[in-house]
Each structure stands twice: as structure tokens, then as C-alpha cells.
Length: 149
Length: 118
Length: 339
Image (tube, rainbow over all chains, first blue to last red; front, side, top):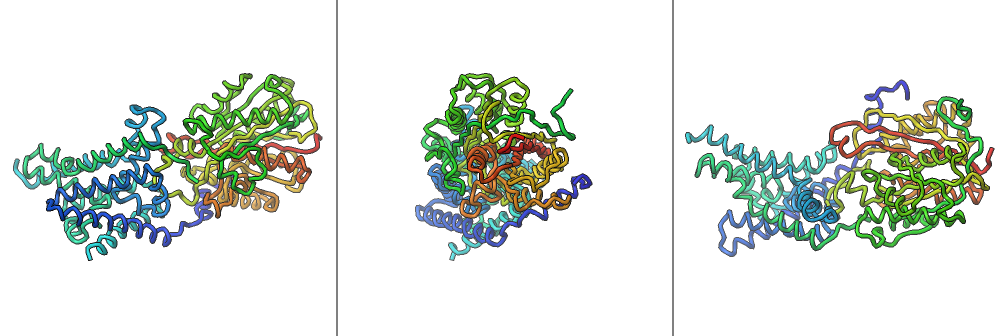
């Protein structure tokens, strides 16, 4: 052991670590993510029946999916879906809702200001930072390259 | 048919995320941010638009679609109102979902407690 | 003149302290595990009627200490020192427990190595003539540790295959200058070993070099061989860490796999209970030692044990900053014979 370098040990550890069941995990992610998108499609088609426009339907679908994700988190079900589905539960917008709701609930005991409200975005905050920040960059680049204003 | 396509395309996007999760040491938070940024870029260069047209919810429900909506909103804002629109456009289009997540998150934290895992 | 030192880093206790009482309290999942029948108290509800998981953990530690003292047929005022630690920031579980117990208190942070660390220090206090009765205790709680080191409970993330499950429980040991055993005869406090493992989801691999180093040093210093022990048991290396230590020891010519075990592997049924690489946490070695090991020694089924609690001394901040995980392991020899 004394003559083993850090690098050699790390390589050695890699050999000792069991491989995750890639296929099983991928199939589960596929089914879970697929079903959530299918539900999204059902909501979408349903909303179109009210004669709403594309933008309104898109926003409405997101809000309903966020509600479903939040509710399942509050009921203690979404973590089980996540355990089964892995990325299939993380990547849909319901996963974004889950990351915010789970964190908010977790910090309830630390109070509603510094607990719930302040800690709500510890996992999902980066999504807002990179999402909103990135969108502004895209908008500005568009102006620079495609419009004279 | 649109249901099947949404299922397949949404499922495939998640499989890509799962493979990254299993083969790297990235956390789910890293995956979400990466997918979001990819969505913004694909949206900006117009590459995601056809996927959305084809798969509808299969493309918009994954976080890639959130990124696409953000950049599409920013570009539309920029077209209509210039610099001010570039700043506000992305957020305007996604404001409903963001407001919903804040409100529902708060309500859930009031009415529910986290449970221990078994 | 340090007359009780032997070899490079081992201490031989001239008047070996006796273990005169132990207690273990565990959560429901641990109670359903293979060692369920050994524990003193199994909770139905891991919040134990408290408002937070942190409070539940402190209550478990407090009740374990009181129960151990009762089992030793003593009362709190007979105890000279409390030595305790836990995983939470600023070791709040132990300090709030010590507030309730009301005797002189040393707080330790040794992460999951706390049980054998506290036994080392408690034994030294007794053998040094500074105390007659000492309580060593530690606790951990899955839900309080999870939120501090990993993710919120309701967050839908998959656990990695190398990750371990923090044991919900508390264990306490009463050491005495007099008694009928089992006795603590040798101590080998460990050095930090850090081979650059940065993955906080693979703590077994991060701690394995420390366990290996302490075990080897213990054999060299004491002259014991694996044959002298009935059981050599590490704290919470889990499946991957255990595999590494067995392999490394074999390369050095020590074949111990038949009597080598790990508390983190023993406490859960990894397949049935879906705990991936095994149990971890301060309570892991604490509840296994204070229930299974102690009771089997009292029965005479095992007579000499080397307990090596292992600790991963990282923090959530050091992990985010990309620092590697310092590992530690302290070894304690527990023997039914005093010499």
C-alpha cells in the first residue's frame, strides 16, 4: 500500500466498484420520462379544446405538470418515482418542481423565512440562474447579429 | 399517434440523461443545468423548433423544452421591443411555470412534512 | 516517560478498563435487519415523537446513555465523564444530550470513527487514573445526515451503487476501572490516510486505506496475528471498502477474510433492504458493537475482538470545493481476559 500512488489507488478502486445496471436503469428512465411526457401531451390536447392559443396551452401545461409534481412530492410519492425512474423523473419539468418542493419542505423546521423561502432554491436555483441569464444572452446576441436596433 | 410520439421522444431524452448519470459522477442538478443550457442553445439556433413541432409534449416537458421556451421568448422579445424585450422575453414566456413552482412549493412546505425513507 | 506505549502507535492498558454496561437504540429499518434481535430498543417511528430529526437523534443518544448506565447498575452521578460525538454540524446531538445528562463532557468529531475514538479516550482516562466510570456514546440519524450531506428526503434522485445508508440509532458503553469484563486491552489510534478519493458517494474506498494502515500497524505493534482474534470488524467500510481492505491485507501476507467483517455489512440485508454498499454513520459501529458484539462476548461465543471504527472526515463544503476525503480508523482490542 505504501508504494501505491494516489493515482494507482484510484485506478484500483475503479476496478473494485460494481457497474450500475445500465440497461435496466435506461429502460426505467425511458418508461418514466415517456409516461410523464405522455401525460403532458394529454393535458396539452385537453387544453386545446378550450380554444386556447399555443402560448397559453404551453404555459397551462407547464403549470399543471408543476402542480402534479409538487403534489406528488408533498404526498411523499415523487421520491419513489425518482428512485425507480432516475433521470426519467429528473429531466421532465415535474422534476424541477420536485427539487424545489422537496427542499422547501425539508427546511420547514428552520422557519418560513430563512428555512423554506431562502433554501427553496438550493437545488433548482441554478436552473433559474442559467435559464434566465442564458435567455437574456440569447436575446442580446440576436439583437447584435440580426437587428440593427 | 401524437401520444406515442410524445412518449418515445420524451423517453429517449431521459435515457440520454440516465446514461450520463450512470457513467459520470455528475449529480442530477448538473444534468438538469446541462440539459437546460443545451435547450437554450438549440432553441437559439432554431434546431429545437422542428423537434417541438414533431413531438409536442415529448419535447417541451423535458427541461430541454424549458430552455427552448426561454430562448424563443428572448428572441421574440428582442424582435418586438429591442433590448428591453431581450431582457424580459424569456422570463415572460416561462413566468407561469416559475410562479407556479414557487407558490406550490411554499404551500406544500406548509401542509406537509418530509418523511423518512424506508 | 510514556511506559504504556508499544511499537509505533499502540497503547497497552496496564489496568484494562472493563465494559460493564451497554445500550443500543435503533430505528425501524435497522430493527428489521439481520441483527434486530440484539438491539435493546427498536423505535417504531424514527422521529420518536420529536419535532425534528435532529431532536430525535439527540433523544436516542440521551436514552441510550441512560439505558447503558442502568444496565451497568449505576446512576448518572456515578459517572465521571461523558465522551460523545456525532455527525451533525457542531456535534449538536451530543452537546444537547450532554446538557441533559449534566456531567463533565468531552465532545468529539470523528465522523463514523467516533465509537472507537471515544473508547480509546475513555480507556486512557480510566487507565491513567483520572476516572473510574466513563460513558462513551455516539449517534446518527439517516434523515438528519441525509439533509446535511446529500439531498432533501423527498427529492427524487437515485442513490449511487457505491453509496451507503446512514444508520439511525445510538449506542453507549459504560467503562469502569473495575469489573468482570470484557476488557479493553489495546488501543491503536489511527493516522489520517487520504489517497485522493473525492467521491462522497464512495466513502468505503476513501476509508479503506486508513483501516488497512491501522490494522497492519496494530499487528506489527502488538505481535498479534489474525489467528489471535475471533473477530476483526471494521466500522462502515461497506461492501467495496471491505473488498479493498481484504485484498490489500492479502497482498501484505495477512489472510483474514474468514474472520473479517464490517458493521455496515452486518447491520443490513443489502439485497432485501436496498442499502447498496451497506450501512454507515456513527451509529453503525456503535449499535453493532454495543449489541451484537458485546452480547456475543458475554455469552462467550467470541472472546477477542478487534473493533476498527472508520471515519470519512470530509464536509459538504470540502466536497463542493473538490477536496479529497481524509479517512481515519481507530482500533480497539476487546478481550474477555484482562491480560
